[in-house]
Amino acid sequence: MTVYHAMPHGLRDGLRRRIIPEGFVDTTHEHATKREALAAHKSQQEWLDLSQRLNSYLLAMEDMSLEMGRMSKRFKHAEGWRRHLHLGFVLTKQTRSQKSSARIILQIELYERSLEKGY
View 1 (cartoon, helix red, strand yellow):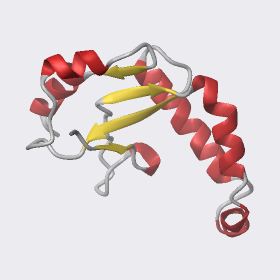
View 2: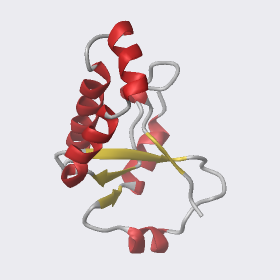
View 3: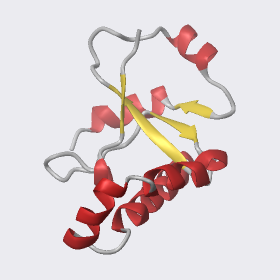
View 4: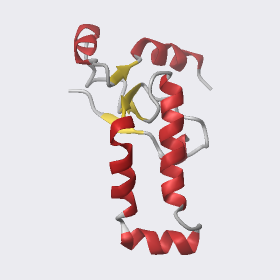
């Protein structure tokens, strides 16, 4: 089993370093539904409207979705995912390729090469 995390808010870690996803999921066809569901969080909306600005959380979701789409180089809207831990819980290369589909891209080799560069 492999455990993946969604991208952090702002696409950066706690030290403001940009996080590069290991894989992408195409959300283009579900984007309108995703936006509608997020807008339905009325308990959050009032507080966020007062503390940030009108619908800023919807704009942030839109920006992150488009950025993940650009990073995928394939989708208009996407979600990015990264593996929880590099030790254990890792699929073999054969299993990884079998899990890939047109709507899911795992860029394992590219991602792992970028990790070797460090910060």
